[in-house]
Length: 390
Image 1 (cartoon, helix red, strand yellow):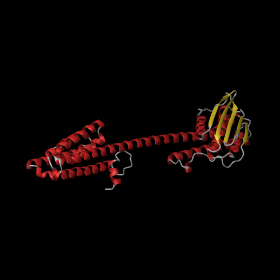
Image 2 (cartoon, rainbow, N blue to C red):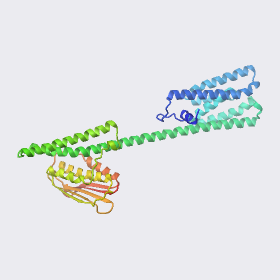
Image 3 (cartoon, rainbow, N blue to C red):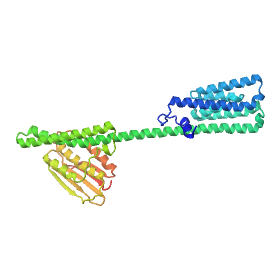
């Protein structure tokens, strides 16, 4: 049996540890190996002592050895009891010596440390008694026998404690992996929720504004009505497309580049976003003070786009008709400032929960920037500072 296979058999007993053998098959194989080891070692110790036995004594020795080996079947359920019985038997039975070591190994793995210490002391006591019952076994002196027996038993206990530590380490690793997986899933859910809000809120606010205009304005020409209806249809179509894309990602479990939720937004797309808002009747004052720099990271560009998009969406929802001032500049090397201002009004009937602002704060924080939002006099201002390279 190779070292890797033995590692799988002995150490990999933690659920989910990647063991390809079934638990029942693995335990049965381990039981068979250890039972054969116990019987073989017991026979090895018994052979030199045969001449020291009477006929009845030899039968009794074999009976104790067989009983000790059979008791190993219950060593997992009752490790302390099985160890105690086999250790007591090994004090007078040569054939029970192997079973006592296997039982002691199991107890070292499963029992409490204080109990393991007591069983180890009992095994050492049995080692002291055995040479008295079978003196000069194989020509070895009393001192030699107890020295070899003591070292062997201590090695078995040490091996058991090493297995115990290994299993504890595996449990800790698996617990850490489970926690990490739960954290990743939570972060992914938050990311998807944030992206859905950013994409759909913008589309649906456009749809709501145009639908409201069609509902209340009776002076629109047929051409203007068709134009606004086309905007509603396009916004609804885009919203459905975004929703289908997110549902597809959730269904397929794809989080790589092929299933990315982020738009391929650049600073050039800001003008398109502003023009789209102006077509809804929103007064937008857009000031872009950035020198072209191909080294700007895609993450910084996407976040800048999202900030402007959220500012325009909030203006349509909470301050319809109020002008919006947008400033995107780079006042110092390596930094971007995005500021969206609009009048605070009591108008607007589109509900909001503040989720978009929370999502923006998370985005900016992940890039190592700073974010603030709130009322400043009679204006509501969103301000973000981003590193040029994120």
